[in-house]
Amino acid sequence: MIKLDAGWTFDNRYARLPERFFSRVSPTPVRAPKLAVLNRSLAAELGLNEEALRSEAGVAVLAGNRIPDGAEPLAQAYAGHQFGYFTMLGDGRAVLIGEHVTPSGKRVDIQLKGSGRTPYSRGGDGRAALGPMLREYIVSEAMHALGIPTTRSLAVVTTGEAIRRETELPGAVLTRVASSHLRVGTFQYAAQWGTKEELRALADYALERHFPGGEETENRYLFLLEQVIARQAALIAQWQLIGFVHGVMNTDNMTISGETIDYGPCAFMDTYDLKTVFSSIDTEGRYAYGNQPYIGGWNLARLAESLLPLLNEDEKKAVALAQEALDQYPTLYHRHWLDGMRAKLGLAEAQEGDGGLIADLLRLMEQYRADYTNTFRALTLGEYTGMALFDASEFREWHERWQTRLSQDSVSREEAYERMRLHNPAVIPRNHRVEEALAAAVDDGDYSVMERFLEALADPYAYSLKQAEYAELPPPSHRPYRTFCGT
Image (cartoon, rainbow, N blue to C red; front, side, top):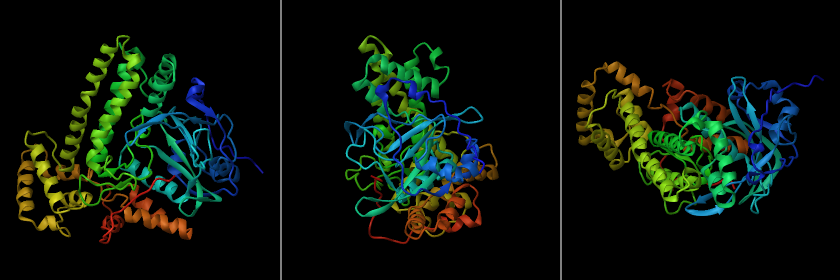
């Protein structure tokens, strides 16, 4: 039999950092690996051979049963503020196989999630259940299609083993692809337990990997901080604009690259409400939808604290530099959010009263418990049915103001509505649809529901007929939707 080459090309620079930042550990083999889902388009983008990935040897790699040539598996060490409390963490159920370099020269991390115990497992079993891994696959690919920076999902492999949570569940391993897995918590770990030189080595690696050319600036570590602030301001604005609730914005879940990471208790908001919380463990609403921009700033302040020794030898000057950089975050975030809201309303030019127009719409949406995504979808299509909001006299008054404002732009009305189509998705991964797809796959082994769902989510701005059913709201429920961490 001819052995197929999957096309892995590893160049593992993180493994050259001081060993304080990781532990060398291999995935724990599983009993009976079977490919559940493979991301064909991502495989092609990575320059990987789909046929080889689907082969017995390829699935063995995706399950962690076989280490591909050139890989240097390790578990990363990091810390983090979890719901405001600082603690030592690390990859407790994930192994970084290595850094794969694509044919275009892009460098990405290949990580196996659910691949067994590591030195950072903290009493956990290091395994993952099929449902949460499929959830991450669905939502991360939906986020990518929506144009939001995110880690990606290459594959999910079932393990043939049961894992125990509250009940016995089928086990699985997810192959996650990321620009890197560097987190704010990685820098917190270095600042707390490493030497200044180890912190510097980590910062230099982050600059080389994500912000090449930054080493030429007058203060390269201030440049690093400023770049992370800018990327996170843009990212969180995109979350807010799309109605995405991350659910667990701990500092170990904020990336240096500006990608969304960790799709545990995440979900998309239906009814517009700033207090929306989905996570079962967020009882105080720390990470509620309306708090996300503020938590982003809080997390960035923790990064700035960690970088202080590198910003300036004089601590007072270092603090002043960090504060000046952090002061830019609210301005950057609001600019991205306001520009995004203008686009959602088809406004091509900025006017002073736009903020008030937007705020009034959001207030009406909250008052009438309007669906967030479908309100903007209706404005885009000009079809006002199915929501109490559209029958309200206040909405009709607002609509007249909006039409008047549109007429004041230099672009045509057709161009304005095309702009709206590009910024208001016709479909999002509605929570009840995600659950429907997961139940079919996990309980019945039927992946066709998930495949059709992913097909509709692949081009969320298409406004195609097949997407209409996925825009329908869930049936009324007396119980709020709740999500749970995969651990």
